[in-house]
Amino acid sequence: MDDVKKYLHNLKDLHPKAVHFCYAFRLGTDGNLFRAADDGEPSGSAGKPILGQIDSLGITNILVIIVRYFGGTLLGVPGLIHAYKTSTQLALQSANIIEKKIEKIFLLEFTYDLMNEVMRILKQYHVNIIKNDMKLFCEFEIGISLDDVEGSIEKLNKLRGVTVKVK
Image 1 (cartoon, rainbow, N blue to C red):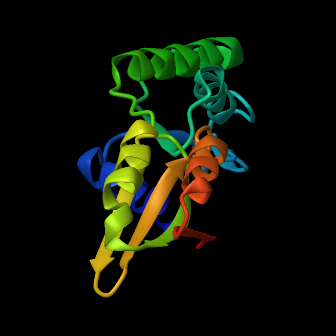
Image 2 (tube, one colour):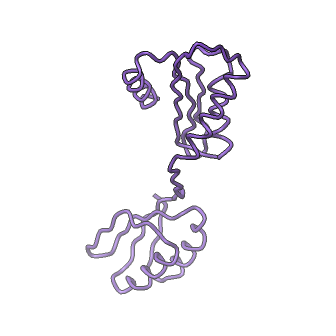
């Protein structure tokens, strides 16, 4: 929430004559943290349409702020809803949306003689090696996509001398 306030403050500094800074955000992998703010517009005419466009694309970890200047024409509630919905839609169409897979973190321990077999499995499942420590034993901290956890852990557990623990 502090980041949202920081972005709003920066935009207000950039646009001192603007009248409304309406926004919506949805955060977290489950998307349960969200908010929609009308910033003085009639209730439900700005934040909800912005959030609706975010939700229609199924995006999380996003903040959309629409800066509005009063142009002398009263739009009415339907006009405001349409304006905020369309503005958000156009902004999201031109945005660079990055898709990231959710990973589960594991600790992997094995002997040096198993390195080739372990690395083959890690490569096959596109496992993210977060950290490795090569001392008496090989110790890896790895991130495995939730879609690949079952298959990759099953293969790693079949290797004799490999220990896999959930971090």
